[in-house]
Structure formats: structure tokens, C-alpha cells
Length: 166
Image (cartoon, rainbow, N blue to C red; front, side):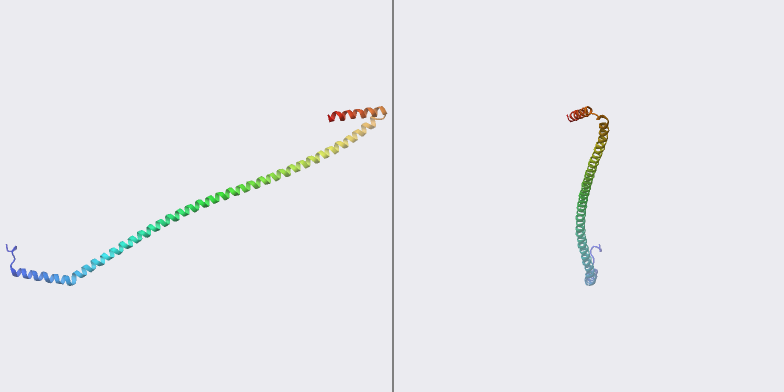
């Protein structure tokens, strides 16, 4: 039972040792320990603050990159539309030019054909006229030796001209 009821001397010395230990710890130990704890707490708070800043910058960067990506997509779509419109315009211009050239070529061909046709008809008429004159001259020389033959020939020619006109 002595352990449960220590005597006064032991109690005094234990109390004195405890006081000295508490005084030494209070003077030299606890300020260092609390300073280290405070310093570590400040470092943790600073790290948390920097992490929050980094997160906010990352979120801003992500939002900015999404915005830039969307802008670049819109610009690409716009450029593709412009290129498509330009392609259509170039094709339409080329088609219009080709049609115009084809029309001009056809007109020139038609004019050339008409000119050739007119020249051919003129040449044929001239040849027919020459042949007719030659034939008429030969026929008239042979057949028109007498007055009766001349009158019959003129009547016959007049009848043929009348039939051809009607």
C-alpha cells in the first residue's frame, strides 16, 4: 500500500523534479515545438493557397483553351465555307466562260456555214447560169433555124416558166 500513499518526501521531490522539467520544457522546448508547429501550419496554409491558385489558373487555362478550340473550329468552318463558296464561284465563272466561248464558237461556225452556204449557192447559181446559157445557146442554134421553130421554143419556155412558178 505504500505505492498508493507515497510519503511526503517522495512526493516533494517528485513535485520539484516535475516543476524543473516543466520549467525547462517551457523555457526551451515548447517555444521551439510550437514555433515548428506554427511554421509547419503556415507552410501548409501557403501550400493550400498556392494549390488553390494553381487550380484556378488551371481552370482558367482550361476555359481559355476550350474557348480557343471553339474559335479555331468556328474559323475552320468559316474558312471551309468561304473556300466552298469561292470554289462554286470559280466553277460558275468557268462554266459561264465556257458557255460564252461555246456560244461564240457556234456563232462563228454558223456564220462560217452561212457564208460558205451562200458562196456555194452563189457559185452553183453562177455555174448553173453559165451551163444554162451554154445549153440554151447550143439548143437555140440548132433548133431556131426557122421562124416557126423560134416561136414554138419561146412558147414552150414560157409554159415551163409558168409551171415552175406555180
